[in-house]
Structures are given as structure tokens and as C-alpha cells.
Image 1: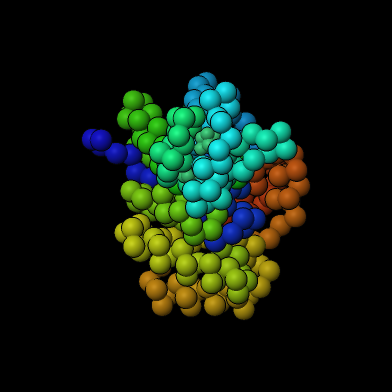
Image 2: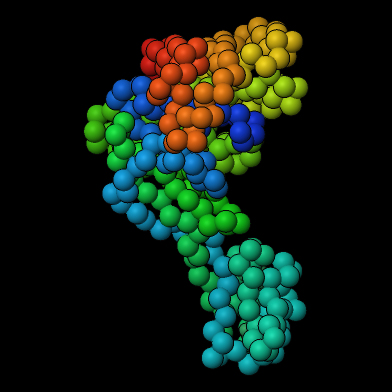
Length: 293
Ligand code: SF4
Ligand code: SF4
């Protein structure tokens, strides 16, 4: 794809650090961008951005075995051969496939003597293109328990790039998935920057270290935001020392303020209403972010 838009991914080592709140706030302030919710297992950016869905598509995941009950002669060979323990006989005596356990190896289609088993691509989620007051948004939802969240993240990012290309936009803001697993890797792949939102706790510093290692592997430039920075000065100093040792810039220290919680209860970000210092700090982060990507 020619002229890719720059991607910035907002990440955190775990949920509940304020990652989505910061993404929503930046999405409201930064211009010329497409917004992406890449937290496909538990998307919640829509709550703060109130998108209007314009297009909805099914996302197909792995192939799973499907048994045609009319052809099945109940020989039990498929159950015997499936090494993923995905086929069992139900109370009615029918052999059925457990979607979650099936690995898609297709062995059962070969062992079935009457050709009763076929592989079928399962629909594991939906992806959407929506309009918000602050720009177009690409988001998705994976069926609970379904796999393939990494592929779905890649899909929504690809759609965002297509949209940015169509509209001549040069920025994509991505609310990344929490943690350090496969979907985080997909969200970082091809990105220019990542903003890692951390809290002044010992586990926060540990998570920060883990994400930085992945970002380094993918050559994504990291920046740090310390959320609820007023809650523990000692741990803030630890994060500052860690950032200095690793030559990473801290681009914001957002203090704790109950106003943020009150705003979230009303589905508002901290930049609406009167969240004083918090609002000022997020504005500073937005200005900086806009200037680098
Ligand atoms: S496709 Fe493989 S894993 Fe799935 S039910 Fe058949 S044998 Fe088991
Ligand atoms: S191997 Fe084929 S015929 Fe035998 S139980 Fe499985 S689906 Fe039915």
C-alpha cells in the first residue's frame, strides 16, 4: 500500500489504566485521523465516542469441522481419532464438534467412512466502519471465547489504512488491546509510535517493561504517560528512572482526580467539563502527539 498513514497505538499492560479514556480524549482533539478500536475482545471506545455504524461485515476465523447428522452412521471413528478431544456424542446420540476445542486439522474428514464431515470457516466476529463527531472509526467485536483476535486487529487496521488513503488522512489513532499477547503484537506491527499508559504501581512498571520489549522488536518508538501520577510519588520516581535508563520520553503525568470518574459515568472524557489539571495535561499530550505523527 502506497503512502501509509502513520499509526500511533495507545497501550497498557492491563485493563483499567485509563488507556481507552486517553485514546478517546486524543481522538477528540487530534485532527486529520481515523480512529481504531483494536481492543476487539472487549471494545469499549464506542461508549465514549458514540459512533453511528455505517457498514458491518462478518469476520471469518479458523476452519472447524461440521458433521452432517443425516449422513452420520454413528461409527464413532471421528471421536476416536480427534486428538483435540473436540468430538463427543451428545445425549441424543449425535456426534457433535466443540467449536472451541476444534483445531481445524481436518483429520476427521479423512477418517469418516461416509463423508459426513466437512470443514467450514466459522464467523467469529463482526467489524464495523462508523462515523463519530470526531472522525471515522473502525472497530470490531469478537465472539466471546473465539480465537483469532490478532487477525481481527490486523483486519481493522487494514480497513483504517484504506479509509485514510481514500480520505487523504495521514494519522491513525489506535486504542490497543491490553496485555502483551498476540493482538498487541498485531496492533504494533507497522505502527510508528506507541504511547504506553502506566500507573505508579510496581506491577505497572513490570508491565511497562514487557510492552517496551515488544515495541523494540517491532521498531516502534515508545512514549510513556503516567496516569494517576499523584497517587504514589515514589513509584513515579521509579518510572522516571526507568524511562531515563531506557532513553524513553515521558510525555505526560496525569494526576488522579475524581472528576474523571464522574465524567466517565456520564460517558464523557476528562476533557469535557471541568477536570482542571487533568484536562490541561491531556491537552499537552494531544499537542505533543499531533506534533510527532
Ligand atoms: S478438525 Fe481436527 S480438531 Fe477438529 S474435530 Fe476434526 S479431528 Fe478434531
Ligand atoms: S466418523 Fe463419520 S459416520 Fe462415524 S461418527 Fe463420525 S461423523 Fe459419524
